[in-house]
Image (spheres, rainbow, N blue to C red):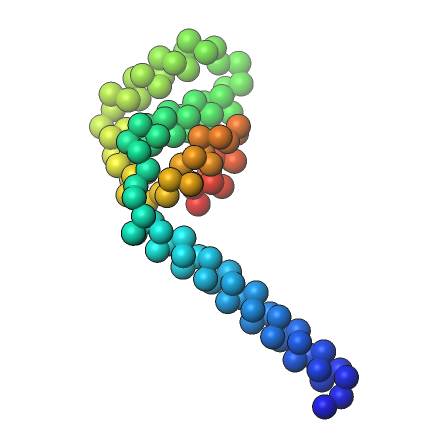
Length: 114
């Protein structure tokens, strides 16, 4: 086989290895969601509140802290809040929730939980 043939085989092997690694990581992540313990209820409560706070701050940069606090407390009384917390516990891993709780911006938080 020529030198260029060996190079093509190496590139193909490397490409297959990269694809297998990415596929394996996705599979492990999905498996962990199903078999790992769910995130704590309190952490999911805090994540939902953080998402609401960050999205409101992004939409309305001049919103006051007391207005944000009231909005979060009002949202906790909505039926959708309990559903959001339940979805967090069902679909997210502890690591994803912790990542979201450390996020400084709503887009960072969204990347953590996707």
